[in-house]
Image (cartoon, rainbow, N blue to C red; front, side, top):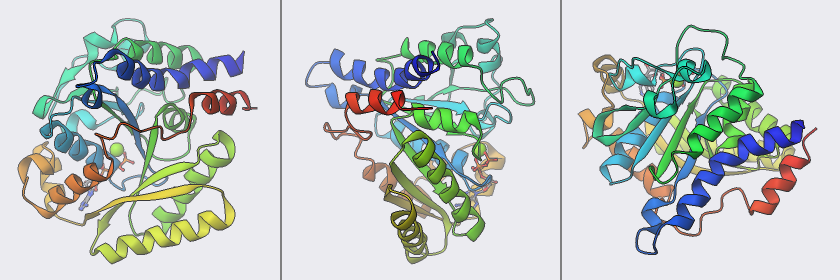
Length: 298
Ligand SMILES: Nc1ncnc2c1ncn2[C@@H]1O[C@H](COP(=O)(O)OP(=O)(O)OP(=O)(O)O)[C@@H](O)[C@H]1O
Ligand SMILES: [Mg+2]
């Protein structure tokens, strides 16, 4: 029963991607295949939400239809980063008061945001029924988005692992700080050993040089290949820049405020490395592999 539940819940986001691919004609296939990515970290405050907001802006400017899900269900704040004041949020959905459609809010550049609530503890550890409802609700949105970005909370809570397992691709964020590196390693280790997640994409935030980012990448790959069997792709580095603080205060993404700045260029490079137009994208292996993997849960 437990296997069935997990299989259904985590499967639905990937379903979203597959169904979009199948429904569209060949010309629009590339643009319409939903890519579902989580943005996650071990340590808090390393820049996950900043990355989600800026990636969303860059992608939207390139013509992709982007849905941002705030999966920080205890201390949500993606709405603040986009200057939104949503009337309803995921708490209303979980309480059965609103449908997902009624909660979605339009944000800058044509981005759509699924906001979460802040300050309520009851959804900080989602029950199976809530997870299932959420996945079913998201499934109903298939065809409406090209990219789904999930902004997770920090740490290794059940919600974090759940959203990461449900996503098609896992983007891990760290800064060069040893504590952030050690925590992101711990998260990948948990996702690998407990949930059989083997592929990660690394964003190194707050760097003063490209070399600093590569150094972090090398450290992580060295220890990962030695102790856990995972593969880490280097997705890109985001420079330390004080305009981020300014952009958070102004409640607009830096890529929107300063599109020609270095950080904005870095986000654009990062989006390029995601190869959103690539047709042959099966990041977590075949569907069969996915079922087998979930069935082997204990
Ligand atoms: N590259 C950067 N340069 C300078 N400041 C940054 C950079 N990236 C993020 N920040 C700042 O770091 C702070 C935390 O960023 P953010 O909220 O995105 O982190 P987070 O990982 O989402 O945090 P949480 O774990 O609490 O959700 C923000 O005030 C932001 O302005
Ligand atoms: Mg955040």
